[in-house]
Amino acid sequence: MSPEPVPPPPPPKCPRCDCGEPFAQQLEKGDKAFRAGEYEMAAELFRSMLAGLAQPDRGLCLRLGNALARAGRLPEALGAFRGAARLGAMRPEELGELAGGLARALGQREWRQSPPGRATEAQGEGQQSSTPIAPRDLLGCPRCRRLLHKPVTLPCGLTVCKRCVECGPARPQARRVNVVLSCVLEKCFPSECLLRKLASQARTLQRQQQPEAALLRCDQALDLGESAAGAGPPVRTPVGR
Image 1: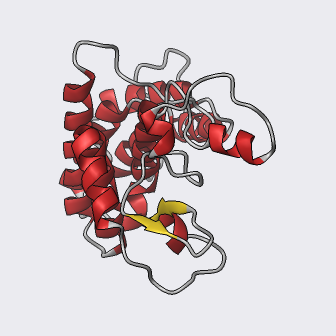
Image 2: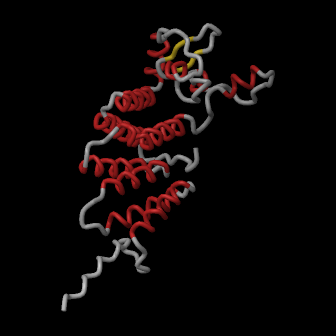
Image 3: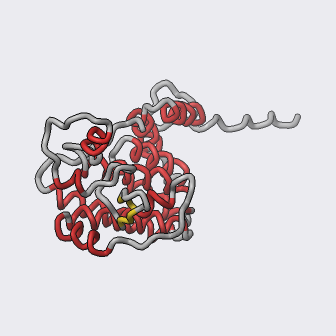
């Protein structure tokens, strides 16, 4: 009499899950929470799943990094992406959420008090501004609402970031960066200028298929942001875009 066939092993269980829910279902829960904008919940689900694995999973590391980046927890997100990098070479598109989170964090940190360009827009509409214009407003880009970076002046007289011109629907001829204004910006806001420079380098390296170098620039920008903030609380970005 032939022995009975051995039944297949049960599907993997979610680590630390008392209900014995299959791993795939927990993964889908995390993905669903991420798609719904519940980034904190998604991050905790992915972190819990990783904690119980005998060997780290690269896909889970990337999911955790993306959720943490969207939640504004950039130092933790960077750690998750480093873990993914140790398990396999990073591709530029895999750093999209980290780059976006860094850009949102820098924008909020620079303009927590008064977004630049609002006073100028109000005056252009014939409205009187009730508050004095701050230096950051005068040196802010009216398009991206951040401190000017590589400022260029358009034929209409408007001064914007060079990247804002390049990203526009109609790309005019390449214009020279205003060197004098750049020097003024670096003198008045050295930390913010360096942060913008590092973020710009990270985007460029990502486009050049150099994700490891881009990750390093993000790390440097985060370190600089934390040191510039001093003992104050770290900047947290809104969950939604």
